Length: 324
Image (spheres, rainbow, N blue to C red):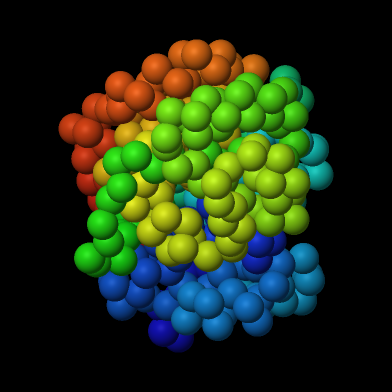
């Protein structure tokens, strides 16, 4: 059997951030002469988009077959091990991990954020992950693991390894704002920021990372332009051509870091705060204060680029840690 790696995550749901993770993982795995096999909601589309094998993540027969044909399961990346959105989400990802372990496969928790977890969820994660190699993408997740009695290693989000299309020019007067449709408390402050930026002569683009969920919020901002996309390269290139990013979506910030564009986060979830803290970038609670965001954009507050380079190196090295 040729060497094959199954990859479990939130793939094939039209979320540009998770598709960016899938793009980066499949590229890096193939560079090492290994075939990636994505567990996807839309396996046909994923296979075509990423040039790899894919299997239906919710069909038991397809899932078992994918694991049988694989040597390793990478659980991640993304924020999979949490029960804030639903206990069923956690049950699914832990179930895939347990199944792979029962089949004798090597399992690596790969560049995930861990948490938020209820006490019961924490106990379930601790039991399912005992003895596994665990690589997380932010320092806060290391602390969460420690509280569960687990040891982890600090990696980095795989999407940090993506590159903009060569030859793009950057407009320092343009600003990208990436809302999230279900974080309604951020919408009015971001509308105020958009209005003030446009009055100051800035070009504002609203970037919808998950069209089915974010389009209404993106169109409500009052921006000069709206980009609605499921393509991570399109999102990355838009960010690379801008002067600043304000992101409620985590991967708006991660792609900004990848592109060398300064950014501010709106921390509706600990993973936003964790990434910004690790990157030395500003983050704000919900609702954010428009005047502070405006000041950061005007001053073009920069993150700690050395810290981001370290993140990229850890993301790159994590593939060797996981696959060797």
